[in-house]
Length: 108
Image (cartoon, rainbow, N blue to C red; front, side, top):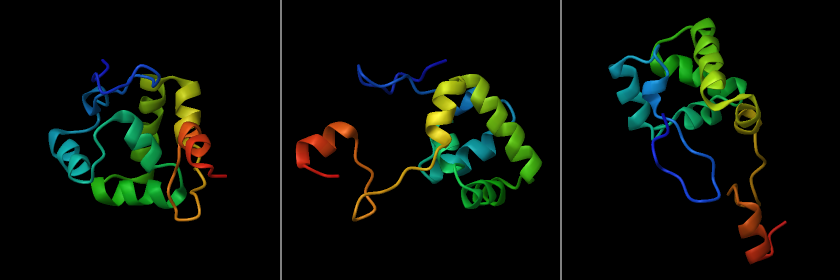
């Protein structure tokens, strides 16, 4: 179920409730870290450090995090999962700019 947090040119976001292995306590832990959607879970785990941090934060094993991410892939679809799970290179200040912002502000 999409959460409705979207603009007209962005894909829908999915509620953490769509990941059944996340208990209410784990959902709260994620939300305290500004991880509020399935998409944010995927993005947070897009490096080995992110996966281990997620496991530690949630009190899960690496295997359990792997299962969580597989369910996340089912929820968002393989194409979107691949996009989100690919680490992004930040700009000169570490900021991640959209393609539109890069054009608007002349960033490379």
